[in-house]
Length: 401
Image (tube, rainbow, N blue to C red; front, side, top):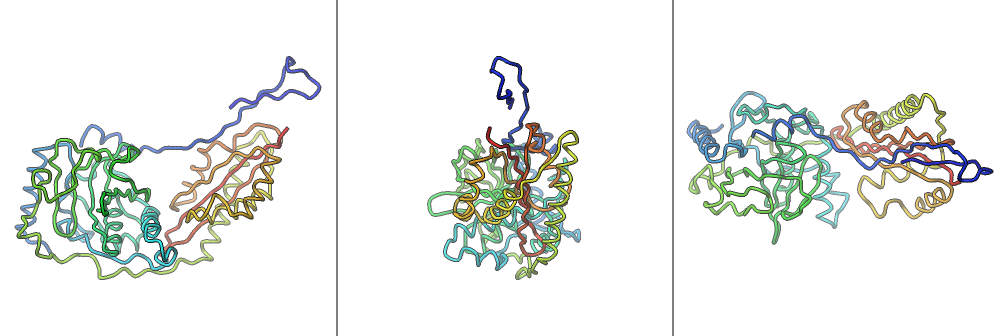
């Protein structure tokens, strides 16, 4: 955005100075594997063989649709994917926040799963030699692939008695994806474990592009409907004309033992460690902002920084409005004197460099207008097992003329 400044004693016809100001709108990330994928696409031995034949037949019908029937665990043993599905307990901390609002609790659980870091995408994923960890290991190691995240979220939902299945498909933004489908009273909801977001089946903003395969603890279903876009799919997998099932009905009723544990044990994250990390990130970002502005002095507005530190903790749970009434008054007072540009960034914690990169990409540091001031605040919300939600608010302030 171009801003022109004229001297007070000079008419508008006189020459003035032009300054470039960048206002950050947002960002989007395309994994390289997503681009590549746009153009491609103790079990009994008898069951494992049936699963391989089933997968081969499904691929013959729809070569570009995804289907996974068997995977290896981290010890190299092959299992049917159904054995990964089992009701498992979420952290008690999540259940205590919204005691009388089950929908808010489900949203928070989905958010928690999305904060677990993801393994890097590999172009040859789903090539028939997938390795999946149990949900307990996914939590313990604080890392997982897309399918492991979806399985974990599905297992959490089953703990509450929800009817939930894992969905394999493709996304416009992420390439190969694994979602969770929940059957509500009169609709189906599609949950993206990567973001924690929930979409109704007919939501035009849902990034899911194809619904290829479903599985739960009883069976695997392959979508044989001609149109596999979410809006067109008929999710009633009991209809054999729409869904091809791996196990016949007389077999799927028999319960196969899950490889998941009876329950997941969680440990509390060290709050002093989190505070040390928050201070380190804030110091590093302030240093980087000054480093990115070698030709301009960088002045920090302490009052605005103080207000931003009050705002960020409230954003983690979306409590109330943007800020509390007290903070709202303070922020309104600043807006009376300053033109403020900024945006809160939220991301799972993986490493400090990822946070630096995210802040740099906003371009807020590049303001050239004279006497620009800056405010920076960092907040880290700790969840169990060292799973952290990081918030960064960088704002630029220019006094009204």
